[in-house]
Length: 438
Ligand SMILES: Cc1ncc(COP(=O)(O)O)c(C=O)c1O
Image (cartoon, rainbow, N blue to C red; front, side):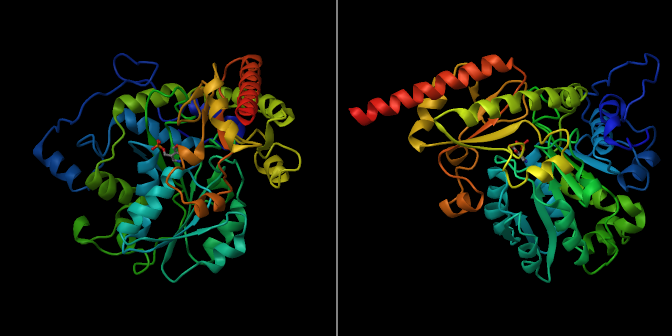
């Protein structure tokens, strides 16, 4: 199916890309192929497929027809050329970066990232010998200054978790490409309904499909989408892709797959060897959700603006962190690059850390949970939950303090959400006043 050419076609791609009814029954929705393995018509056919000389499904760790529809749909939504699905968003980030940094090499990463990604980079990747420099995403010159001879990736979130800041992707991509470094962007919070990083300089996009792509909170999933346009042809710099390898019978992936070489490395080596495969049933669940991505995103963003206005006016609130707020340093960038919105996450900073627990515990509609992009509105306290392993210095670099809460805005009636917030903020204020009198 043809790639959608502009944002107006996103909702069509979300419903149709990657699938056309066929076969005896012509099922209208994507069938769930629940099979671990595939029958080969002959031994010769099996030999060709295992040797990767012929395409086709062999074993569901590296490919499944239902998962493949999700991959094609994700590629279409992101204006990419290739996609590899993974068991989780965490696996998508890990595989996308491992495929670039074997050796081990160096990564420059934004200091404002989801806490689990920080854990991956600072702990597990460090143990693998991969070095990370964390840099302020709003300071392109600092990214250039951090480049080392063996830097092999820039990594950032297009909309950061949880503060929804907006790094200057075109500026960072220009720097990266001048140094032959690919740019990997986590587009989970933005969603392709709002923003497509590959059209603004990124080379590779990753998602936690667990979030808005699925939208129902019932499954975990991830995906790596490749533009197919980064120049991986230097066999010294990109030995895994451009140099002959014993694993590929003395040929290079580039020779065999051309522009698809990077995604074949992710699939045929990292997904195959490490095994974080997206289950077909989860792909099926994500496909169901993805069909309504653009309407869900638009509705959640409308709710978000109402909640942000209410919160900013409440006396318990010090600040609402969201680029839709006039005066936010990225207000103009949001209008220019994210005319539809930046997703459904906002952060609210209370006047006093002491209000946090009573506020959370007084909520009745909004639920305390470590997820985002769901139909229901969820709250989390980053410093003690999603970002709990960050040091005080890392928290400060991420722009976080202990009075900040993340709210992922859902699809409930906004009047109910605002009443809930009002009641809980007032209850928290009353509780802290009582404590200070006691
Ligand atoms: C921005 C971002 N990237 C990646 C992940 C990891 O995704 P998953 O939980 O599906 O492994 C998350 C999870 O919260 C996230 O918020």
